[in-house]
Amino acid sequence: MAGRLQGKIAVITGGAAGIGRAFAERLAAEGADIAIADISAATETEAAITAIGRRALVVKTDVSNPDDVAAFAAAVAENFGHADILINNAGIYPLKAFDDISYEDWKRIFAINVDSQFLTAKAFVPGMKAKNWGRIINMTSAVFWLNIPNFVHYVSTKAANIGFTRA
Image 1 (cartoon, one colour):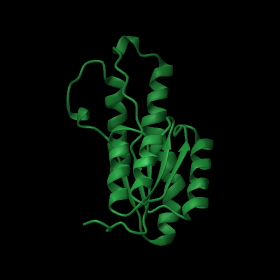
Image 2 (tube, helix red, strand yellow):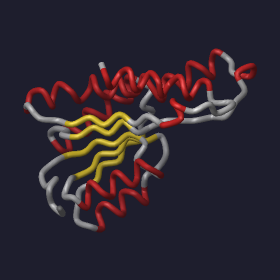
Image 3 (cartoon, one colour):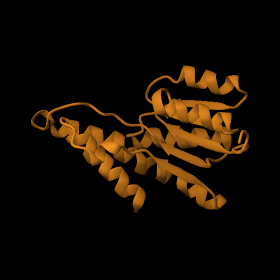
Image 4 (spheres, helix red, strand yellow):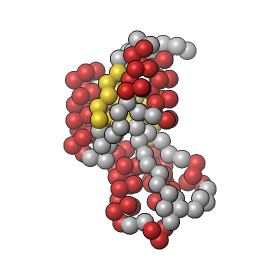
C-alpha cells in the first residue's frame, strides 16, 4: 500500500499532536505531502514527515479565524498548488459543568470545533471541484452517542460535525 498517495497533498488541521499527527505521519508514509494548520508548533510532526522524504508545510493557524484560514489556504496554494485531501481534525474538549459554561465558552468551542470545518471546506473545496477529485474527513466523536457528564458543549459540537458532514 505504500505510495498510494504519491502526488497527493493532504491538509490537516490540528496536526501538531495526537490524532492529527498520526494522520500526518501515516499519509506521508503513503506518499502524500502534508500541510498542517495548528495553533501550536508542529515541529516534531514536521520533522517526522521530512525524515521520510515528504514535503511538509506548517502554518500557525487559528482555524476559527477566517483570516487565518484564508492565509493558510494561500500558503498551501503557493507551496503545493492545490489540496487533494482535507482532514478537519482540530478541536478542543474542555470539561465543564453545564451550569458553569458561559456563552463565551459555548461560542469558543463551536468556533474551533464547528466553524473551522466550514471555513476550511470553503477554502479547499473549490480547488477539489476544479480538479474533479478530493476527499474530506471531518472528525467527530463517539461521545455523541454517550452520556458523559460535563461535556454538553463538546457533544453539541460533535452533533453539528455529524450534521455538516452528512449534509
